[in-house]
Image 1 (cartoon, rainbow, N blue to C red):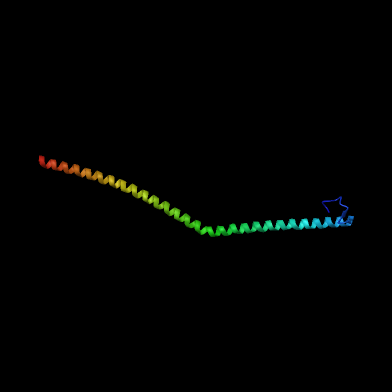
Image 2: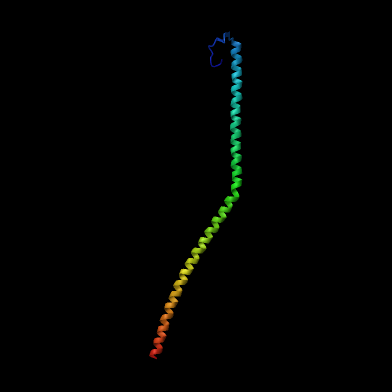
Length: 116
């Protein structure tokens, strides 16, 4: 009745001002009740989502720490491999230089012996 203020009769019965006031009061109460229900449901949904996020964070925390440890270990291993590769490259160069130096010295000695 509150949406139809000019309505005078319903189902062949007259509607008095008391009935209109009662209908308006009932409508206001129901509107308030359902608005409160909506707010309660939204709050409950927000709380449930927040709790789910917390549980997910707790479940992922050990996995995240393991992943970080594995990434650190991988980085350390890559650095060690790079250092080893660099060491062996230099060692190979040193050994080539030594071999070439030994050959030169052997040739030089043999020449000295032959000439001597």
